[in-house]
Length: 277
Image (cartoon, rainbow, N blue to C red; front, side):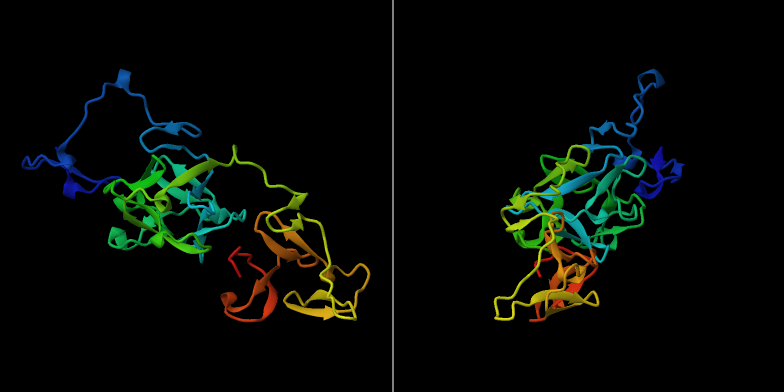
């Protein structure tokens, strides 16, 4: 008995073939009264090291402990925790793939495994989409020596994540934090690292003689104006999840250095990314 073409895919034909001893001709006999079945939702798949359909974060063990995330909703990077669905993952027992909460697409080594670049893609359960978790590593099912890796070991916001030969460096080590066990983000109090009180509106008051305040105009531009009582566009607050300064009027807009930090212009922008700029 031979699985045609050694292709491990749903509905692949089984045929008879000359014996060659490869794995697509190897079978285990398991009697029905001993069959344990597959783990169901909430149960641990011991072989893959993951709980079925239990959402989780993946946290790099580099010093900044950034989270596995997606850029352009497609390619793998590490970012500061930001609460977006691009940082939430789950394990699907049917496909044996890790999927994103964003759109349920699966981990995928680009070009059907012929590169080192990672993305999410439509689920097909090819070997290049299947990974096991163990000893703080995510390793490919076909080549266990090929692991999820922060490229170049650089612990920086938006750094690319790839697959690379296992070497046990910290840039290949990851912690899983299941959402039902994750610490809740603070909603008040002082963030000592950043120096702001969380979600507490504040003004940015110039020390020039007129003591004007910063104001967010038209959701984007930041200018100085005379203080106006109750004007929300002159108020800002610190968001603990994204670690950004947001407008108290346009709450989904955060302060940003324009051109991905390559400009001297400061503005407010939507689509908060938690990048360094």
